[in-house]
Image (cartoon, rainbow over all chains, first blue to last red; front, side, top):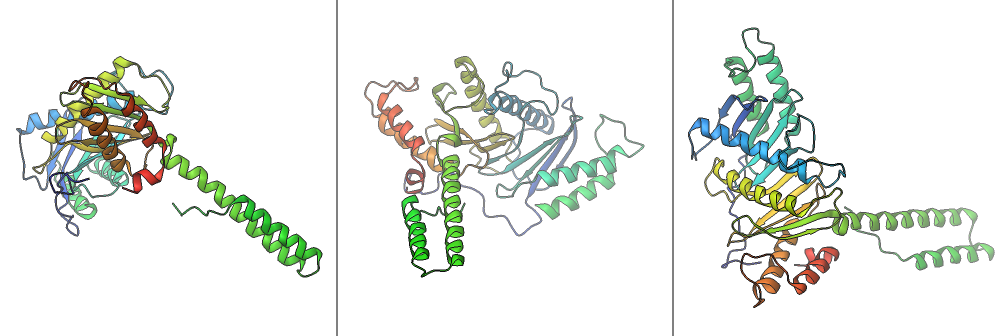
Length: 170
Length: 200
């Protein structure tokens, strides 16, 4: 189908470079919606200040989760009203969404830690990689005796390992 | 998915009978008959398997529901193609307007300029493909995870919408769609398999 002579309706960024700088940013939230970590590797566009951005991201994930829990076409069980509070792992969740400019991969651990990785739209399935990142979080943050749960992560070793790992996958 | 092997049941039967006749007239050994029987079984299981597979990917089973929302987020068309559980009118209206907002927020969060909103949402038990027209009408379809060619289906639905809804002189813009011809053609498009979606 042709629109105004163009065959492609949604312009997408150029194909990903071989590897290295296709990861855009990453968020880690705890179950109360506090942003524990925000890393950014390649973000030319910024529309909001950091705190508003984190709130908007958490709100998007929360609402998409209640949307998928309500929509789930495979379970006949009563799903309650839209926006019913759901425990982690309860109801149908989602693992990624894609727009023409980015792809967002999402993982939630049973304790409610949410890991969000934003990459180039043409990256493949990142579910395993997010599990690896969760393992890194357990190894470098949770096992750190100086870290108090629920506070923002300030751990140099975790940041460097994370940067290295993300450069390897995206 | 491999191309379906299209050999009719009758042709296969004829092959086996020919083998029997040849065996009776002593022109063929028992071993050749066994070979023919093995080929017969394999081909038959192939064709059965492929029919099931194609129905799953392209037929009714692949699509759970279809929504059309206007540029302000109001649901103007909703059709269910056999999803489990109940989604009443109020719920479908809420879900549609929630999707409209999520689509807008995803544009704000883009790290690169020029974002046009979510195209594909991959949930645990379904995929949601969304297509937004230049005027802001959004078409989205809920289907089985990994279903292919949904972009083509959505563009085809858009084509039907322009042909049978927008060109209908009794249709009021941004209002729920009640056009019989649109319904009929949409049902045909969803039921008809690969020829419609791949041939375009």
